[in-house]
Length: 383
Ligand SMILES: Nc1nc2c(ncn2[C@@H]2O[C@H](COP(=O)(O)OP(=O)(O)O)[C@@H](O)[C@H]2O)c(=O)[nH]1
Ligand SMILES: [Mg+2]
Image 1 (cartoon, rainbow, N blue to C red):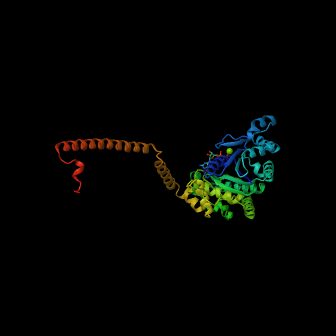
Image 2 (cartoon, helix red, strand yellow):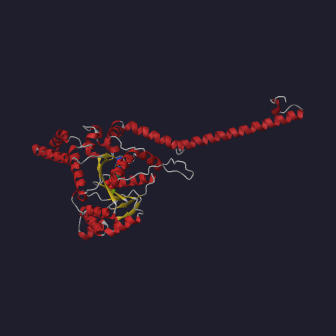
């Protein structure tokens, strides 16, 4: 049975980038993976695309034909995709064996994950075909920097979880960027936000934010905030993983969470070559880590340290690490220059050695002519 991973989330939350990152990561650990674009207005396809919904429906064409704006055009296009479900089914079959992981990159319209029915109906039909489905709901971590944005995002995530009733992982993306957009001044530690702890603690900062930006009745805002907080807390469903897509550890942690959600069973043994030697490739190391019960989960405390508290220091350490790796691989220009110097020096020494040997040979011949013992015999012990 194949697994379909569906990243959802507002435009710019990182869906296409995650598809690209996961495609690279899964390929590196030898897990077959394809990515299909379902966004009829996608102008950023960084990954190798297996199939593209724009072969079926083009948003500009829909907008012209139906006299719709970009938002309505996209929703209409998703309905066309639903009406042409056979097209999707065939494209998925073309992706190869049902063991494969298939990523679908959908549009970011909020309607699709709050109340529009095309996406849940498409997923339902895919599930009936036998695909396992995992939804990955993305949210730019910049929302943590404004309490009102964080609260409304929680509401959006909760709605997404209720609208798409599949295993779902909520992810705060772009953690590497959080400090630059104000993450160093957050009033609470990162785990407060990822674990969605007691939201009532947010009330004073929500009120301060609203007092600064609105002239309307603050009491009504307070009552609304409290009602939303109570609603989110009563459901108790929302929590977040974190992601910095270019960070290997962060990607490994997210993939482990995805695997837990999809029930992916790891091959326990490490791969071997023809002679039976254990391979030291990434796939093998991943299999080993999983078979030894590595949960793969990055602690929030470590994420906070890596991307907020000690970001500059650890960025620098990481840069040096990469430099060292590149140096070892002989990839840096200075390394090439250094290798050239070493080779030149060896050649020069070789030339000097040749001169020395020739000089010794000449001396030995002269000694032999004089009737003296050859240089090589001088040290010989008497028999
Ligand atoms: N710094 C950083 N930028 C990211 C990350 N993920 C995505 N982005 C950037 O966010 C922007 C929007 O990403 P994209 O994948 O196109 O979002 P989509 O509209 O949800 O598909 C792009 O410029 C990405 O390079 C991340 O983990 N860190
Ligand atoms: Mg995109």
